[in-house]
Length: 109
Image (cartoon, rainbow, N blue to C red; front, side, top):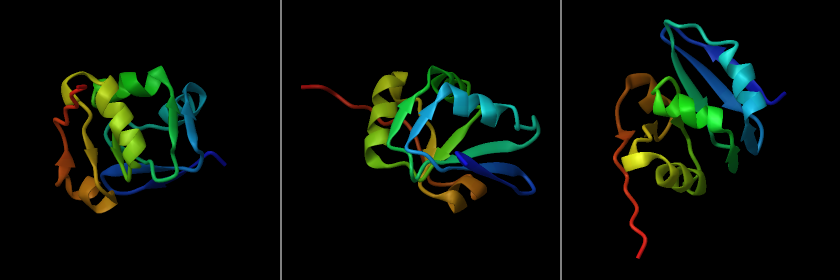
């Protein structure tokens, strides 16, 4: 199983159980989304992202991420314009909508 889904009152959380996220996995996740719920991806096992579709949904702010590894967090912060990536430290922050990591900017010297 590439992911597990849990449904709560206000959100749906997908626990990603693979090291690489691709468009096929994102399409499977999107097919199970309900419009009225907040969507979160637990990224604790993810080491690589190979999905322009995920980037599109992140830019549209339809998906929130939490438990990111530092390499994935750095990668996403660099490729998304102006530190647009909004993510959370852990599930409880995602659930309570607090301690959101935003506006990270990296400079190359």
